[in-house]
Each structure stands twice: as C-alpha cells, then as structure tokens.
Length: 119
Image (tube, rainbow, N blue to C red; front, top):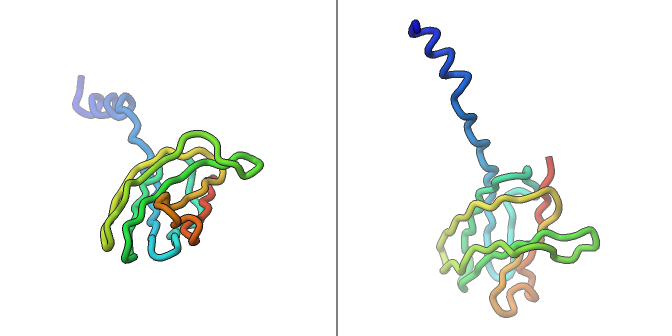
C-alpha cells in the first residue's frame, strides 16, 4: 500500500476524539455561590470550585424534576479550605440543577444556585 493511501485509510478508521468538556467556575464565599456561567451544554462539564471565603465550603448538585424537586443522584465536590481550588468532571443531562454547599447552615444562609443544562 502506498504511503498516501495508508494515511487516508488510517484517517477513516481512527476513533473520533471525545468532545471537549464545557468548563465552569463556581466561587464560594460567605454566603454566596457565584457561577461563571448560568448555562452549559449537556455532556461532560469540568467544574472548578474556588473557595474565596474564610470558612470551608463544598459543592453538591442534583438535577431537578419538572416540579422543582431533586431527582437522581447527588454529585459532589468535597470540602475546600479557604483559598483552595478543587475540580471534578460531571456528566450532566439536559435540565435544571440545584447547586448548594452542604455544610451545616450554609445553604440556609444563601449558598445555593441554579444551573441550566441546554443545547
């Protein structure tokens, strides 16, 4: 087989590269969650949690059903120390997701947000 024909054959049989993940930063401080984007595309989402506060903070997310109730499993990024950064890649389906800090009293104090996943 000629080199050019071999390259053409390889080009058609090579596996497709995975679609790059959307990226999003969530900044946590007392007593807010600030999202760098209000919406992302379905699929892989690379989330970074930056703790800009004085207390430890974590992040949880759960998909909401049509009535606004949590459904399915809860996704988590563990507690991040003040000034710290943690990262996770989540696979998200279309819909709305509630995000919150799970540490005692933090959600009630205002550490919650809503993320939309849409095309």
